[in-house]
Amino acid sequence: MLLRKYGAEGAEAIRAHEGLKTKTLANVKKNFNGTKRTIVDKRFTPFNFDNINDLYSVVYPHHDLHTWQIEEQMRMSGYLDPRGTTKTIPTDAAPLREYLVANNSAGKDSIIISPAVGFFLLTRIKCSVILTSASHRQLKTQTEKHIRNFCDNANDKLGVFALDYKDLTIHCHLTGSECILFATDTPGKVEGYHPLEPGRDLIIILNEVKSVQDEIIRAVLRCFGYNYWIEVSSAGLVGTHLHRMVQSADRVYPEVPLPGESFTRTITVDDCPHISESNKNDLIEDCGGIDSPIAQASLYSKFIYLDTVYVIPADLLIYPPPVAGLLGNKLRAGLDLSMGGAEAVLTVYRGNIPVAVEAWRIANEPKLNLRILEAAERHGLRGPETNADASGIGAPIIDRLHEAGFVVNRVRNNEKAFRKVYKNKGTENWWVLRRLIQDKILLLPRDEKLLTQLKLRRYKIDENNVLMVEPKREAASRGEDSPDRADSLVLCFADVDASDVWRQAEKVKSGLKLGKYVVNPETFDEKIREWEPERKRVSIFNRTTAWSGNMMTKLRRKR
Image (tube, rainbow, N blue to C red; front, side):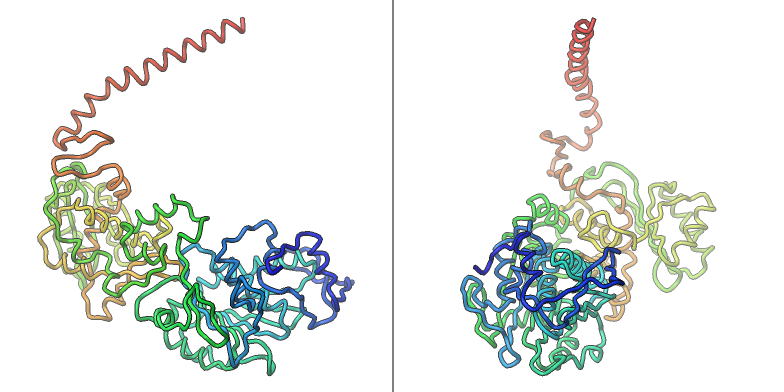
């Protein structure tokens, strides 16, 4: 049976498979966790696992996999029809070329790539596995972490120190096979990979290929002799290498590929029961709705067009003026700082209504500080209601403002975001503004320069499907101005919890919805005071009386 489970007894039988001779050395080699291991004395004697799922069942005997995960493990093992019994080992003349597009958190690294690497290293003599990605961070924090974890567990379950790793290289003492992981943006670094010996296996795995440059792909294609070409990634932009390969594949699931043909399969959140509805809905809300590009790419593996990668698309900026009071009557301000080259901008709002946008191009710091302090006094700002950019040149300017008594809130865009879907705090703040505009809460200033900057700011989706606002230097390379006025508006609402706005303060044209009640903004405070006595009388006084009675009864019984 192809999907058989070994269990403890099966694992013991595997350790005694034919030809495997072991002995305990006087100086036993230690694994990374410091525990002693048995070293294989006879080299180049592979384990005889039939498929990846068999190995995975031994290493993780209590893990229940989804149907698609088992099928893809079987397909990469040579069972091109995972439900059949025919096994075909790909060759360099007829390789397996698979393009697997899967949603975020589907288990690409832990369920597909890591056990596949372990399987090839343990069962193939002098096999080479080349695994690459555009991101060093992806390799270190995701792919390598899962491969190391699999290696440690495999060594424990099999009872031999077969898989060893050092930095980005994994070596199998038993078979002489190796896996090399690397991330590079230099095509020349990936040339020259070939089988270790004629007739040996060469497996090419491109992880999160949506982020790999076409030059890298072309360089890897110049590596001859591979019998496996596997690309595993979440969806990215239309027109990229991955999109072209998916569109031109010879076979599309549920079709079964033939040797030498290309094959593609798409996995969505609906194929992954381990992703809860709560997590799914949180991502949808964070991204701005089910139709947002990041939700479609992350959950449903849809490729997105370049014109959808603007944080605030132009069509979102067109809506009727909202009523005042949707964000209360609080005075708030955003201060984006610069010295001469770009603009220093102060944006002031009362609630959701703009009060002023003031911009200066001043290269002299004392003079700039004076202008800022004059504007703050003019608009009644005292400091705590002002969020200022503390990155780069902004830090010393803020220090001088504090010395003058204008103590503002420091906002650092590179800090960690509260929600994991965002790369940093700056990106999260932009998405808060997007949601306030998308839900038609803000009345935007009549400033064409500001509106243009809002429409042009782009974002990226990294290898982990995390949102990241495009760095300003990349926008500048296209000839775009620094979005200083837009950044000032973003800072203005950096302390707003957008989830409270769109979940709890649902807007209506005539007022504000609080729970099941629609309240006119002008009488909001009065309505709260009207409800307060009733709430105290019913929910606090009566419950307290009941508790007291019960407590007195218990005390009498004790006596």
